[in-house]
Length: 160
Image 1 (cartoon, rainbow, N blue to C red):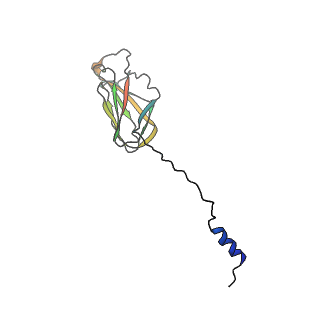
Image 2 (cartoon, rainbow, N blue to C red):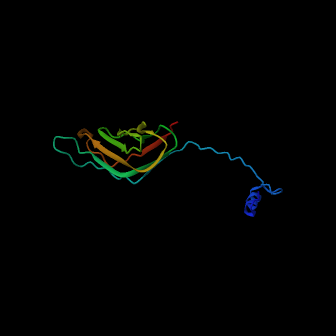
Image 3 (cartoon, rainbow, N blue to C red):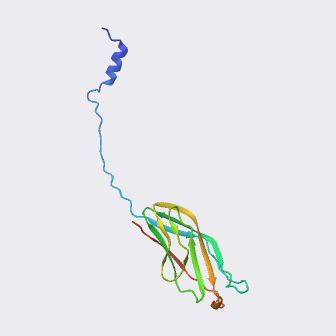
């Protein structure tokens, strides 16, 4: 049986050539990903001024939604707590509501000097542009209050 020259060429190119061995070099790359829990806010809630009421009812609360927040976490079950730097005057309440990211739970909270949970169950996500609502309310017994301010501290607490 005779084999055609074309077949000889295919067979010859399919065989490894002596002395043409490939060289290799190996490296080990070590890596790790640390826990990440980041929060930021943007916008300015401005002044909240109560100046109206319906006769026979408490003064009309006022709200502001000019602030947004962003969050990044690579952990499970992280949360955001909120507190203010000084107590509110008697009969006056400053509340906070933060729009929850996907899968988390938001809680409308009255702010005080002890941190309270505002958003819980934040798990492995990156989201931004979430609304923050501040609401100021007062009872009639609060009387009048000269212009005052409070610093709000939002803290991201790591999950697991």
